[in-house]
Image (cartoon, rainbow, N blue to C red; front, top):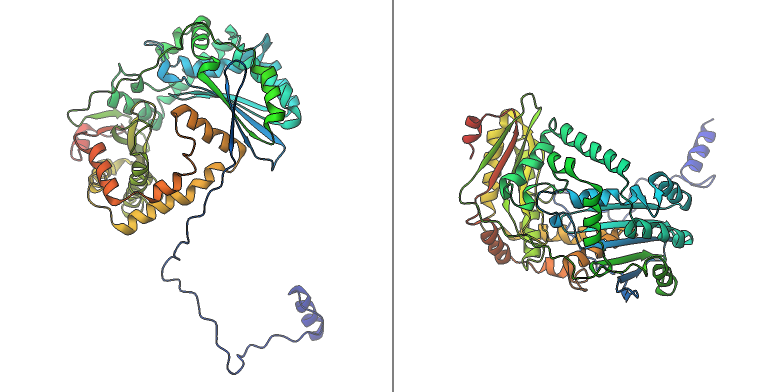
Length: 474
């Protein structure tokens, strides 16, 4: 029995029958392997280089730009139409129009209803969706390359020939109104409405969320959607990004067939300008009382910068130090040190206009004032010189995480769509890591001075918090 047990153990360990057990004693003259030093984190190696496939640029007969990026690992294609108009183009009094127009594109087009479109896409194994931001509207198609031609025909109907059926408009309108009513019970949703309004004011487009308000949504008509679509969806204001198992020789004829007849309307495309708001002259506090809320939602910030700022990389590193990573100062303070919040963060929402900078968290209601005070401690603390090791860690965090943004064809398509939306140079991603690693402490100090000096920060707090309590912290 003892021999059988030894044999079974030997086989389980991958050994051979009859093999001798390894000796436990160290032979004379040999050295015991040194234990690894776990007293400090290992030193990171050199930053790996990101090698992206080349972008091949073409133009259809109607002037529609086409960027093709070949990636032949999977037999699928991702086609993204970039329309350089979004919620910033909403007419005054019709905030939310661009967002609703994008949502309605696939709800009926080319004489086919939404269910017929959905059935056709399912049969083709394709996904088609539209979304909008303040700066752009994107229509994305993901499909096996064997079904690309018929899927592009569906996409062309949705982009060029939407019907905006009344029954679907009524349905989506009610969905959005219901969502706004439900948001009144959600402190985070309330804060996302209250904060931009406090920073930009009601008269500025950025002061209202991209989805609009219940008052504007109630008034939208099919004609409103048709007029916005006719004015902004035009080939001279758009571009296609095609990624995946394609080549120019195979995909350009398909694109020409599907979208080559799309012609721009007469006249110049509409000009969209977002005015720079006047800087705040004093710190302001917006308090929304929400009795019974489990946590207080805090958002603190100011008018930030536009996406074309030459200080982008320095601001990216600065924000990583402040609130852009798990080990950032805000998260270490409010989560790890004080336990006021599960997480705290900050971000620059850079748009074609000067979008907001915001730092925020959901915190214990009985520690709201203390949490706000700690936010300001950290916001003021980054005005001092950042230590060299902390700066290096932040730069490595950004640089090492950068390649993860290009894992899938959809990721790649979205990344290059951003270049089109913001007029970024062709070598932007090729030089990204080098420009991050080149940021110096002096660069960070300069941008801190530029963004935070003479720009008093706005505070929005939602929860069961009284003004007297909050006044202690601000």
